[in-house]
Image (tube, rainbow, N blue to C red; front, side, top):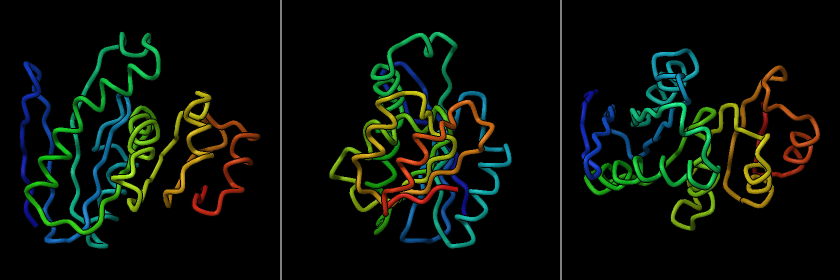
Length: 178
């Protein structure tokens, strides 16, 4: 296994990522939450599980100020995608992956749900959503219309846990909820 620390420059902005190469034909791109980094339990155990199965893993190390949360959801989506798309493209261009998975937590679920799940490019990709932001109607509506194989993990005490929305999503055969 090789751990590569990389930096990509997007205009004047520097975005770092860690590419853990396990020699796999499958890669999982991970998008962190606001203040929830890759050393925290959900990402640590997710990373270890991916490496044991064996996946290559890419941790994208973006960070944003609190001003981001004052913007409309569509603008937040564009900002995060602007930072992560060049990294996804670079990793996929330089490796021969046959399968792709995306794992996001909270803030990191926004670009997955609002864009990647809507794209035909990633129609066969697996999506893992840790505490998706179900309070946003567009997030919920997208989950109802997509056909990606997906796993949602959310706690009943999470502020984004809305029983009626969870119940509606549970009726979809392509989405598993824990």
